[in-house]
Image (cartoon, rainbow, N blue to C red; front, side):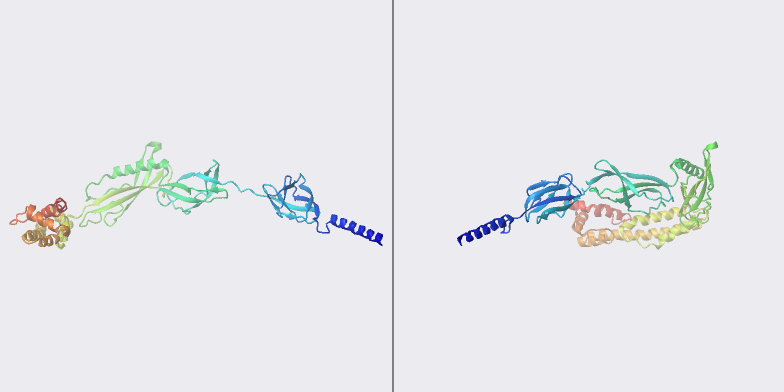
Length: 442
């Protein structure tokens, strides 16, 4: 009985040892795995439980690494600079292969800055079709020059006018290029009437036209002889230019220089001559140089005098000191125009008397204002201010100063028994204009 019990006990003990060695009683299992990197990649570190964990192995040239005695549940992380792995880690659960796919990390290109942009320049003729360039040359921070596309601010440039034009545009930035200073593309276009090599020829032709026509320092009373063409240079170098004339007041002076009408006033007329190069080589009509002549067609003396007299007769005033100079000048213009009438003494006498009547009316208005000022000096500072303000630019701030200057300083040296129209000037200069300074000094 006892021997049988011992045999059974021995069997049970043996089974317990086997179970313990096999882990069947809760002991940890261990495995052997082969990490396989696809595509094959050497130098991949296999780390335990995290990317910063203990290094367990490194793959060889075949992209594989065998690791033994790994406990169940151990996480393996493949790590190599410049690569990502899929999956990023795997857990040990059995013997055998543990595959990972390696993908190189694409390095972002190093950003370079634009440091300079070439300024483009070009020359064209008026009316010439011009297409803005699609790219400009830019210099980068590493001194490399690249062509960059441009979005121009004015992509439909018109060359209808002569001059120098600057057009800017936004640079189109490819990946890896920055523009921290917001530099712009720029093109400078010079639009000319004629090619630069012909500039002097046109200038010589313009000078020749002016020389042949002459100068007009005084209003003209006769027709002008306008040349239809001029020639510059001599012999084989001679070049002929046609001249097409146009008047801006053809009802007064025709395109041919004929006086068609003389009015009551002198008429200023601009004659424009367009030069077209005829030989030795034909020049397109769109490339002219223009000659301008300013001509004053003299007014008809009688019409001018009558118009000026009627103008001053219709004038009601002056109502303010600042109108005095203007009406006095118009009266003098009327007198001069009457003097210019020849061969009609009766008309001259009639117009002179009418001018005299205007002078008397204007003179009465001026002397009445002077009298009002002198009378107010004997009354009060308020009445003096009202008299001044009725015709001059009087300032209420200086009311007391006007009174002081008129009564205490005696600045108005005017004889009340013989008041003259020009005495308004004395009040303006001695009282109105000097009041601010006197007020400051008091």
